[in-house]
Image (tube, rainbow, N blue to C red; front, side, top):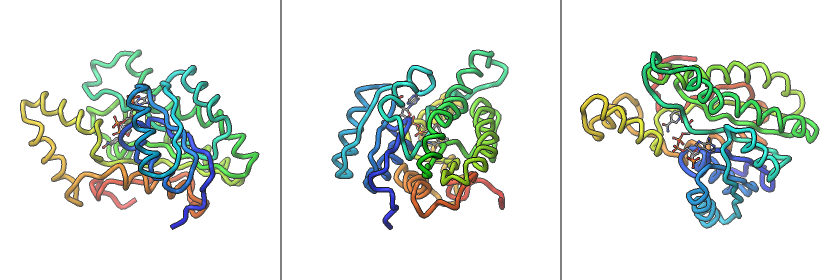
Amino acid sequence: MDLGISGRKAIVCGASAGLGRGTARALALDGVEVLIVARDPERLARAAAELAAETGHPVAHLAADVTTEGGREAVLAACPDPDILINNAGGPPVGDFREWDRETWIKALDANMLSAIFFMRAVIDGMIARRFGRIVNITSYMVKAPVAFLGLSNGARAGLTGFVGGLSRDVAPHGVTINNVLPGQFDTDRLRGNHQRQAEASGRDFDTVRAQAIRAIPAGRLGTPEEFGAMCAFLCSTHAGFITGQNILLDGGQVQGLL
Ligand code: NAP
């Protein structure tokens, strides 16, 4: 399917690996001019070169920490008028809420709530003026099915979700859509790290923890960054102009619920 967005400009945050990279790949495959952002400059440059070779389209890159004001300013200087914004950053640490002080909470809010809000604030009026905009926030299935050890993530992402619920309706008359995509368990560095920590904490080995995690997924497997990226790219397409303010779960059926 032609997504109808060839030549559009996109900022994809957190895109040297995992779900952000999968999204950058899907957008570039459709001819979008993609700028990928992550902190580690070497891994980022490698990802940009690999994505360009894989998709046949140039992929620009900028090393920045999107949780800082300076990082966001650098990204916006490199791409001041994006048609597409994919908000994404690393997830916060897991643990026991008794151990999380104010500083830990502020870091989680910066990464998984405020950075997305400040990026939206910076680009949305330009999108409104051009009468086209697509914003996708990568959140988590934990928004619908929270568990205590991911409390920092649940709290910050639920805040972003509530905020987007209002803003998405406000900008809908102007051709701008905002949606959140909620990954279940996808085979990325982040998930492998979480499984490793759970293994260490419970005295089990990594493969046992991973197999148990997969048993909880009715599809019987982990998701791939490519299929995650395909959904994000569709939401950025011209065909998805009537989808806004939604929380779209990609989880292989893991979350038990109808709505
Ligand atoms: P990942 O494999 O660890 O990749 C994260 C990417 O974001 C990397 O490119 C990383 O590069 C970049 N990044 C991290 N912090 C950043 C920052 N402050 N500024 C700019 N770039 C940053 O993670 P993932 O699995 O794709 O997960 C993406 C998001 O989805 C996370 O918030 C995660 O919690 C959430 N999620 C994932 C799953 C899953 O199953 N994978 C499930 C639920 C929710 P640098 O480190 O070099 O910056």
